[in-house]
Image 1: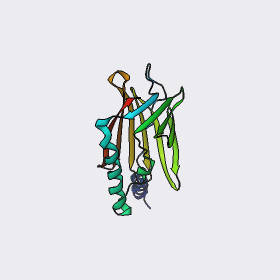
Image 2: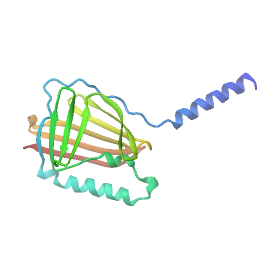
Image 3: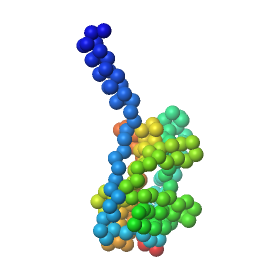
Image 4: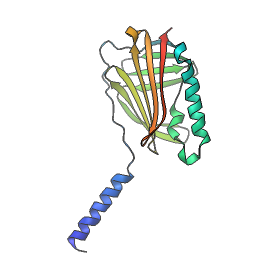
Length: 178
């Protein structure tokens, strides 16, 4: 082979490797913003009561679609009407309706699994918001954010599931301090 053919072949191998690599998620800051503490008992605001139903409906619709189009990342989504958030110096614990507790470490970047389904997760701070991103092997991403609102009297949560240029779920919830 001539050197130009070898160079072209090497470029082709590099380009195909890059194209095959799944999306990446960017690590978040482990530094807690000064004065931000999400701790508390939080109750879903009555104006947000329909969001739990919308999330369930969106997830049910996704389950009813062909398996090849379903996003696996959805199984990492927890929701509830009552949240208990405990913030420590290293992380956050979120209890959903006293049934499920999720633990997140500030600045974490690790693999997580629910049964046989594995995903990559990062979590940490972006400004005064705590952000959790979970990416499945098909490139679907679950993005959750938690931030205080109304002078600390509300916990605002956004939930988004996206893949490529498609948004499968985009929801916002407000919780009142209990």
